[in-house]
Length: 208
Image (cartoon, rainbow, N blue to C red; front, top):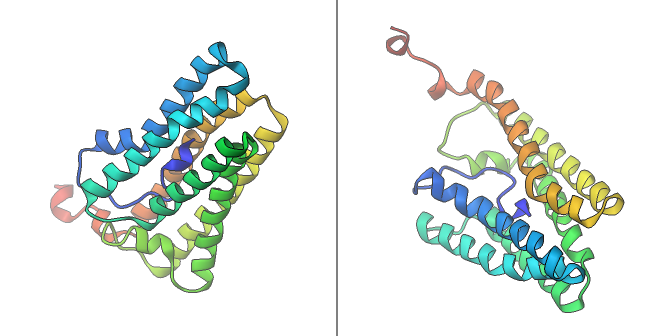
């Protein structure tokens, strides 16, 4: 359930890094842990029980981020809203399809917005990272297009996994697979950022 975290990394928060890590991954780990327990105790309802536990934790994580950063970031807000809507529909209608398709729809939204913002010349990625570092416009465009294509790929992978694999396999992928793929993707962008961000280049005094 890693889509509770913004797929596009936000500016660095004011709080300690471990707190941000906890709010980003906490809801997903709660879902995973409750699902593992419910699989043994109530196998037919495991995904619904886990979703019921996941929702209040996701809301608490969003509220904590709002309180500590003193602002409502648009991407986490939209993500949380979609989580509430689709998880609520799944619990109300007793249809796990809404739970399994939710990451797909969120990633399609991120992909569309990122690529669309480049086309509209209002680069969302640049806005999200505003103040963190400075890059030439063409580099921002490259990063936004790469990210848009990456989230489109995540949407396709999610669809393939939940439609072809067992539910438990999808839960494992959705908890850990997205995190691993996202980490690899953003680490792969670091050389491009370091090459073009002047504030990240060593100065003469650093070299001494």
